[in-house]
Amino acid sequence: EQRDLQGLVNEKAVTANGIPVRLAANIGKLSDIIEAQKVGVKEIGLFRTEFLYMDRNSLPTEEEQYQSYKQVVEAFPHRVIIRTLDIGGDKELPYLKLAKELNPFLGKRAIRLALTEKGLFKTQLRAILRASRHGNIGIMFPMIATLEELQAAKELLAAAKAELVAEGVELANPVEVGMMMETPAAALAADIFAKEVDFFSIGTNDLIQYTMAADRMNEQVAYLYQPTHPAICRLLEGIVQAGHNAGIWVGMCGEMAGNPEYTEHLLKMGLDELSMTRGAVLRVKQKIRQISL
Ligand code: PEP
Ligand code: MG
Image 1: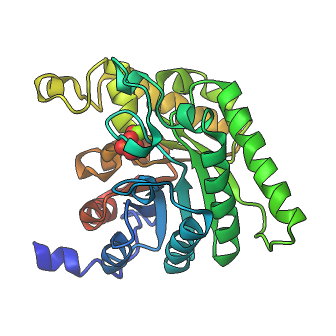
Image 2: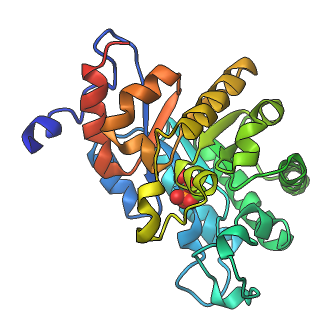
């Protein structure tokens, strides 16, 4: 079977009846670049940037971040979606001295933290914008629940851009700006958010966790992790429809996207892009090539 899969590395992700599907990889550290290239991936649908901040004693500088983003963007010229910092929840940064929380997954995580640590956030946005001229970048904000959060993030992005322009730094053509769809609040109000972004990327790991009220790390409630529960189906369909009604593309970067069991379901739902861990890419591609839509 491994040999059959290996033969698919250079084949197109296209359905049996000829419909092309955008297949992308999720990466979380620079060594993933080579691994993703080995399975023929041309596009990154989720670049988790947490690694830049973890296992160290201080914040990464703008220059350090810029060099890392540049490396990824040059390796995947089609497109790289960079997600801004998603720390909090189970991931801690000792040097930030964050308050202990009773429910970290419901606490100051991801965009909530970024908007209270504006200096940290702006440094990251500047580094991403600077890297944009080396390829095709999209910026994505994690854990958005309210329009105000999205607007505040976009304002900070505009401020970072204005700073760079004033400094005479060369920037790329408009960078796509999107948001993760991973809170039930955002999913249920997707039509409102769709007017404010260029794309959605569905984070099923968190969307399922928060919708089913079941900790994604807790084995004892793992049976509640049900990607085809009617409630999840309705949310996913609603997100795709709201996105398409507003003329934006909708991808999925949660684990569900990398499970071939769900590939047909997701394509029929109309998802425009599936992004997954590199280990899942060839199996999902094989599945896509068997499906007739
Ligand atoms: C998700 O929540 O589905 C997702 C892709 O983000 P993370 O797993 O990094 O929380
Ligand atoms: Mg998430």
